[in-house]
Length: 400
Image (tube, rainbow, N blue to C red; front, top):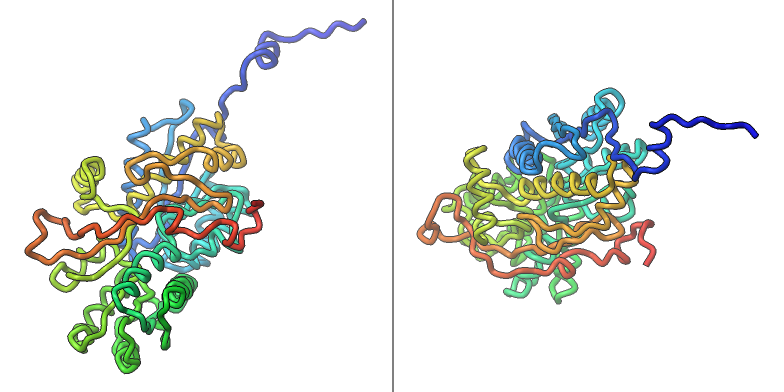
């Protein structure tokens, strides 16, 4: 009989528990978003800082290997975003890409990442298609989506008597999804949609669009846009006396960053939906103050959501004992989300992270006690109500 001699290393490999493995001896996370356009304050460099905070709070390492964060500006262009993502994956050994402001960008990068078998966690884009027909086994959607915005802001305004709507919609995937989701909520609650007009991304002149909305006679003009587009639309609506004439503006995606940019005098009374508010409790306030010291701004849901996404990704690597994509994706689906952003959060089969969202109202200037304290919390909407039932999402990965 032949004797087989095994080295000590071979014996150890056969008898010891699986050794933790990290490809290239480093975990590298890419934050890809708009850093120079209409969504620069919405996410931008502040999301990058949130990612760095998460890594630092985790100890800078996972499985005893260093964690690095790289960032780039996709300029809201899917082709540029895809080229950056491909370079990151093919030559720079990036393991996961996150943030991905702009829905058309997020859809393109998630599709590429599925092909490359890499994790994406979207915190900056809103379309429900990311967890719908175009879902991915390695794609996750954190922070918010158009369905949650529609349930929050749209549902609240219908209940307050705003039962006829006209939409001013950004002319790309995000705007279409937000208009569709909000319109469905309006109709489901007894209201009607009288019309819509679409505008280019990053337009500076909303006059013709606002005049059409004003002429519609709708009680509510739904702004299915975001960032500087929403700020500019609200400013120009003021010039046309739209609110003074009795119509209401619904800022369907409006965050703390945009309220600060617009100014509380102009934004007061607006109803909006976010999944994070820095001054909601002691823990969120402490996080907000740390973020402010670092950036000079308070975090919105995209920034806090990015912090949560990075933290959850690192926890998943730690739990899996490897940064291999399939194992990490499995742990992201399995582990609860417990951090400053979400309590009792859970990831559904379609990749949607489900946590509570908040219906907010912008305070009157005299009611704001400290800088950046802009919101009254009107209601907490449980995540299971805010987000679509995964079985109804159209995602082919959902089995029950």
